[in-house]
Amino acid sequence: MATSKNKGISEFEVDADAMIDDIDFDVAQWESEQIGFPPYWNPGEGKKFLARVIARDERDPTFVRYVLQAQCKHLCQKGPADDAEPCEVKAGEFFTCSVYAALPLSEYFGVVCLVTTLKKRKLAATAENPQKRDMWDFNLKVAPADHKMLAQKKVEAAKQLGMTNDSGL
Image 1 (cartoon, rainbow, N blue to C red):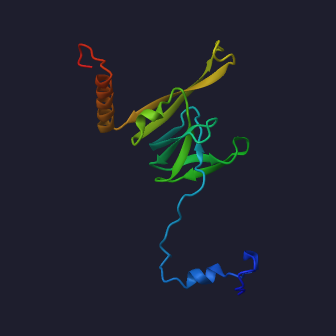
Image 2: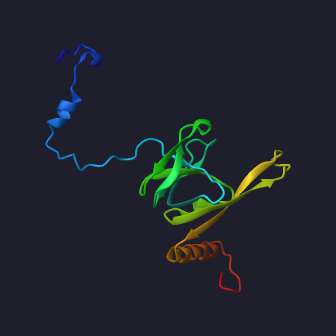
Image 3: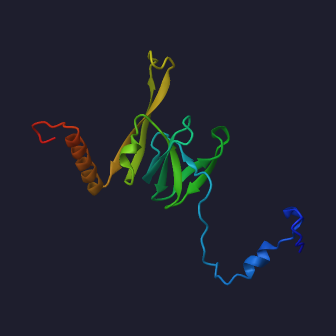
């Protein structure tokens, strides 16, 4: 193997496999980790996901999305939308979901949600948005304990804002 400090890295001969074989670790039982950009989930009538809401990814302001951790297997896509390849996301792995007006996932960070796509409906053009567009409707369910915790958070937030009524809110 070349050792001169003046030689470029491409001139070195490295046998990484042999080096790894010399390491005293039992790697036979090791498992692969999910790396790279997570696959994405697209809605479709009747499509569902069961996932924990992890984060809102706003690194690209033109393509904001949520990062979710699958609680069971899901069929997702990877690659450019016009040339998407189907892929399976396993329980514990991450996938993303675009931000949809009718799916307020930012209210559910840390919570496991069952989301079902109901239907797509046409929205008329408005002064703010002169183009006709589609909007997905969703159903979102959470476990009873999470529902109770979320309701309590809403009551506490209302109290902090000084919003109360006769029903105690």
